[in-house]
Image 1 (tube, one colour):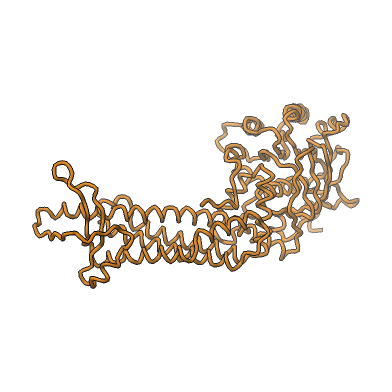
Image 2: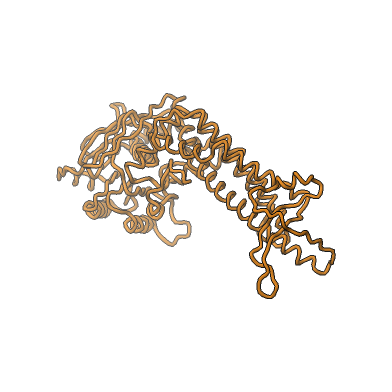
Length: 506
């Protein structure tokens, strides 16, 4: 039984997007702290899914519908995740006691008993999960309803009781490993077609013996042979082990299957628990959230009251931005220093990752395309090894992106080519946009390069839009983007005067 509340429809995505750079450039570690809420496993699960954004609309719609149910049944989702974690911890404890290097000295009956204890521990948690799903099944998501039907239909009360009864019957191996074995004589008078008839308990009554392992083929005509010669003791041990091996395999295979299902439950319900942690955090702070809408036609970006989660978490406040455009490939973002350009770039990149992970977005409306991959190119510190200068570092990083990016992807550029002269930077920026323009790539480019941005603005091409971080008359930053022509100045003097004023104490 495969659990399909999350499907990885794009395993190759991990080969495209650079997770380390996304985490660093978009400052996602603070966001992952909120999602994890102190649970390192939740952090790993959420980070993995966020770094592999889904690219199928049907998959994202399914995740959104399951998340809506999770919001309305958050206690159930948390319980299932916690039960799966606890069960796997117990299984791991038993696994640690039977490491591979010790297998050759552990008798088969002892191995069976360890597997029995593992199975009984897992069954207790599966019983809890199945019972909870039967009691609380008023879901609207078809994926979640299908999962509940399959899971509760497989782990029925009768099935769980029968398996537990069978496992408990094997506990007799704690007292004895005497067995009744059936076999035929083969070539060379060697035993063949050997089978276990029953496990003998000398302390039990004959009636108890008849009831043991009723599933095993029994024979009324058998002879007991008592071995007293020590010279063949090892051979007897081998016969006993061989007769019990198939029971060990049966219980081991059951445990393997159950462990796989518990790992799926942990991962998939953990993914939604991480979303619930973020949802509750934003709700407490009055931040609006919405489920994204995906457009499969022309390029669309319609965003209302989009917040930067990094600032929401770090400073408990942030200014929201709203834009609405169709048919635009390149967003050229200019304007005042410290005016919110990079903040908007980061807020959009983070929201897009959340949207394509199957989460909600921190906005009142979010309409976008589904991108095949997402890349960032932000400034880096100078190479400590002194092998490359800053411009060479930028170009090497861009070369890597160009080799990995695919059509219909998203590229976020922040002050790219700021490490060289304005003339050279303008030339390189034009070449870059021209090169990616035919690939259907959407590019958001934050730049202070007036020569580049204004020459592009004068062309009045419909695929380009120009946003500007503006300032109020007194020089105060409003941290909002407006559509407008690039300006020659970034108003750096505003910051100079503010800093000098503070340093002089006046």
